[in-house]
Length: 384
Image (tube, rainbow, N blue to C red; front, side):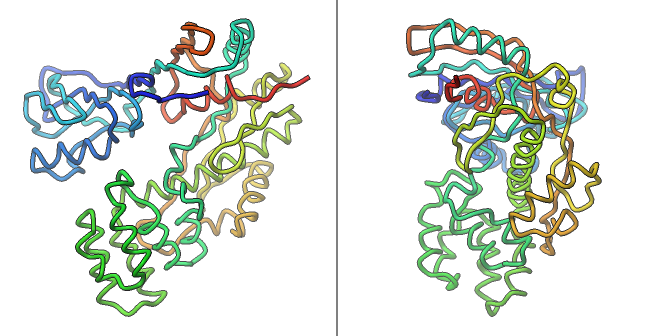
């Protein structure tokens, strides 16, 4: 299976509870982008309008290797279209309240899947199974871009009190931006750590420069590295926290499904393997399609069976229980919310192009991953 060979193969339409109103303080736009991250486009728009990036509100991050349409608002923004290298911002009118994650309902996908090895008959059967039994609602690899280096989660090290290691992973091995853009900066840090002054001129953002200036002017120590986290961009730090929560959630759900006694089939992914079912007994419908499991948080209150499963995952990570799932670093917090164990894609349709290509269309609620649906549909191993 190959996807995203070209941006035109992966098209995402954001669905949100927002529309132009007769009046309002916020200019509403439809953002079209191709082959660019949401962060990079927002940054370019902010530079053009001489605004802070935080002044531009949006619902969610869209894949770089795709064509996407999403809503953006800017308080007292210009009533005109803006065109950039990889994007077009189309003015729709005014609205009284800004765009946010809360207004996001989900995304409609139109995807071309290449090099598929599945007969039309089997594809039709698998589509029917997914429409009846749904798909496990795992977080997919896009959520874990910060650990593609294979060295682990910066936030895990932060929880364990390994502040220098956490900072090294955050700065030298990861990036808030497109990795190529920060390559020289990260190479410099790896070569010169902890001689931070050597890399000051390569810092890709103001916050990273301020952070390096702080580190260069203080003696390296556990206290210094801990204090440095107060200078990390807050949104980026929260994104890293959420990535680690997502990993713990995935592992908890795998244990949950195993405990239900389901026949589970493995599919490899960046952080090991994901486990999928094809179907389940009728009596487990509520336990699978009607159940939500919250993301881990130190204040999370769970029923005992679920708590035991999540804490089993945490112990394997070296963290002694949910109450220890916290950090002492400023800004690194763990917001929790309930997430469906499994979801059923809506308006699911397919069209066979030839023996090896299939177009798929479906709608998913916010926070769910189209690539998980594709993994379930095309990558499950054969069974007898």
